[in-house]
Amino acid sequence: MEILRAPWRMKYIEYVALKREKGCFICSAAEKGVGEESLVLFKGEYGIVQMNLYPYNTGHLLVSPLRHVSSLGALKDEELLGLIKLVSTSIEAVKRALNPEGFNVGLNLGRVAGAGLEDHVHFHVVPRWSGDTNFMPIIANTKVIPEAVIETYRRIAKYRDLIKEK
Image 1 (cartoon, rainbow, N blue to C red):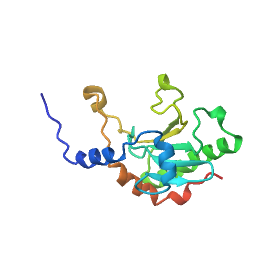
Image 2: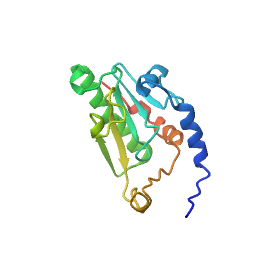
Image 3: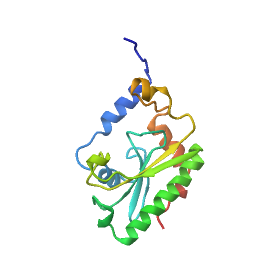
């Protein structure tokens, strides 16, 4: 058996253990408001933008309505417009902070579609770079995230003034 050593991961493991909560993590983050503890970059009238604690890739954001609803159809027109504006302006902030070459943007509706949290609809904004996928997911079924979430939060937070819902 080969052993993959990553001693710096302990900081992340301890951080995740502190953050684990019962209930809706999006609603909890919205209650806490903007800051490193909540990983919230923006909180407005209709929605919030927060870092994903379990990212698919470095800089993975979640854009969510403030109201706890499970479908886009349950949102009012102004909430929908606010969410799309947040997705768009979040992309601009991430472009400035991380200089990605592209983005995957979308949402998972229902558990069979991959939703980890079915009851609170949210968009995923995932920056992408050439070479960000390598042999690790194929050979070892392992994804490598090269930067701690809190460090990425700090880099993007420098551009949070670009994030707007109106």
